[in-house]
Image (cartoon, rainbow, N blue to C red; front, side, top):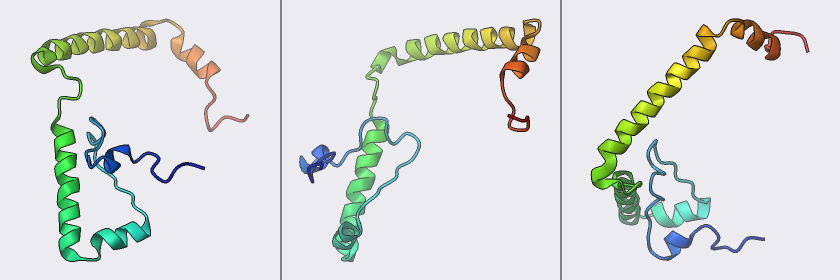
Length: 115
């Protein structure tokens, strides 16, 4: 049985921020029913709780999680170059390798084909 505080280290330390990078594609909050009642039953308390959550989410979203700082543009340029090489290799395999499509279709089951 997990301890009642398992997974709540940051919250118990008074640090409501989500982990860096965890809010890059949105934020989902899950809370138990009794917690919702205690946090949001009073409008002022609910507003204060939402302000804390929004401020923490914004801070987490704006932090330089990779700590690249001044090096960011060089790193991003390197990733762009790697991405271009990977795309060229993929297209070479798929479109320029004789027999690849036949091999792929023969070795990959289609949902429409019988088992």
